[in-house]
Length: 127
Image (cartoon, rainbow, N blue to C red; front, side, top):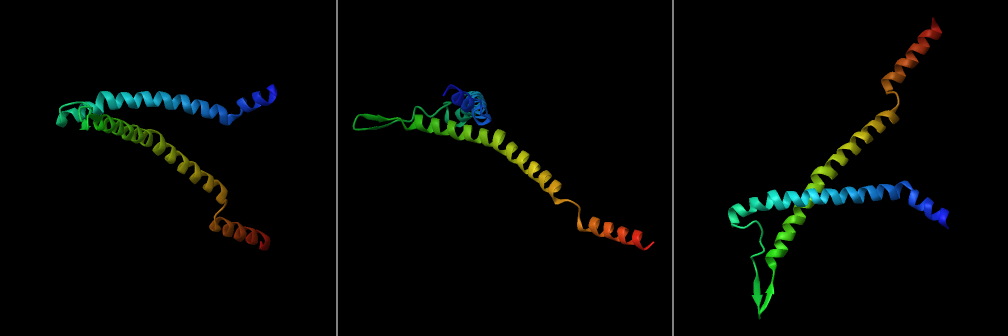
């Protein structure tokens, strides 16, 4: 059982998943800092505060913190945009280049090359 567990943990997919998780956590910290220290202060220019936490609805004595939700939503959208811009787009470009290279390798010789080879072969046989 210990060997099976060791084999399970040592699989490439588990290692890749662990590395992805750690890198994702580190990336999240960078994007959180970007949102908190750059984007939200820019939001403060027209609205006067770097977040929307001051927006509160009071219904029958209960405070509904809609501003906190809006601040979290803006942070979420910015994290999603950062992941898209810095991870998804470069990865898709990399994959499309890889697929183009694989298709070029699999394509083999063109029709022109084959016809030229046949012509040369026939010319060599008649001479």
